[in-house]
Image 1 (cartoon, rainbow, N blue to C red):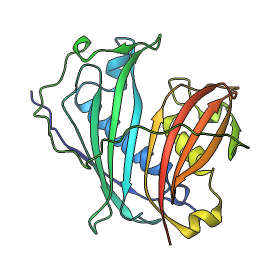
Image 2 (image 1 turned 60 degrees about the horizontal axis):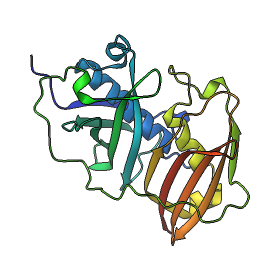
Image 3 (image 1 turned 90 degrees about the vertical axis):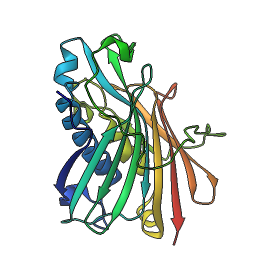
Image 4 (image 1 turned 120 degrees about the vertical axis):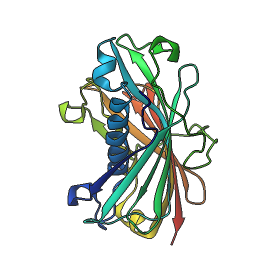
Length: 246
């Protein structure tokens, strides 16, 4: 039986999903996308429960979010997602989010499946669903390269990982990193600037007891690179954040 190639879900923005200005938080954006993608993957017969039978699990490797406007606390938002035809070991998926007044956010993401030992599972290793894949992406984006930080000084934010950061794969949940990244900016900066887009590359997993230090560098006007290092040795996350100065 052919599977629907698009899935929609609605969410009501709660206060804990918004920031000091009542705007949706970047981590909540990723959370809504993650939940909707999980539901669609389950309908496709490729959800975490299905993959676990083979000893596999999904991992988000890269994500880009373009923001026109951020919905506010209490708004009802609709998330729409559709996957693109997979290639070798990469699964790409598009998302949009809107509050009824037009599309407010667009997202493009890359996923892969891993074995318990951390090895990537090729597309050919698991039966694919019968589906008419949509070629059109939610947003045109190809610049996945994030430059390294040239010179590190004091970290802009640090955290020691504990159990509350975990997901069911026993490592830091990917949406948590969005909070860490934006903790590199002050309340005043986030009040004075308008967030236009951000991208995150998930490089390594982090676990209980790891100390993560995040470094920030402005590489152009309003454009920042964030680099998160585990125990000041390994890069676990890199990000690019772009603001429009008010």
